[in-house]
Amino acid sequence: RGLGDVYKRQVLDGAAIFAGSCASCHGADGAGTGRGPSILGIGQFFPEDASPLINLVTNGGTNMPEFGTKLTTDEIEAVVQYVVATFQ
Image 1 (cartoon, rainbow, N blue to C red):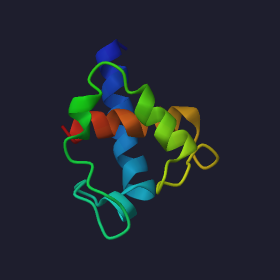
Image 2 (image 1 turned 90 degrees about the horizontal axis):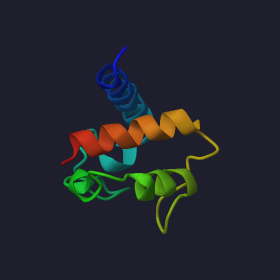
Image 3 (image 1 turned 120 degrees about the vertical axis):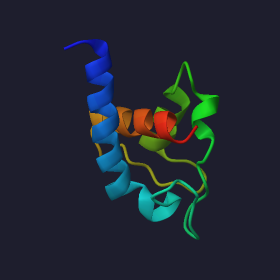
Image 4 (image 1 turned 30 degrees about the vertical axis):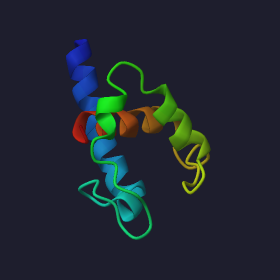
């Protein structure tokens, strides 16, 4: 498998993780809900290096819970790749 195939698989896995762990706050379409902000356009800020998002998902933030104890490192990387690829 080439890197493109690995990336596609990771984004597909990330979509499922997002639906189960993130959409209840950020909305299935990323537009936000009363529980969490919109993430539309967030991908444009991390085209080269998504490590700040990986850190946020892993450790949480001001109003965001941490997922480092709920998801594996691979799952967090997959959901971040999905978010960056989808919510440009």
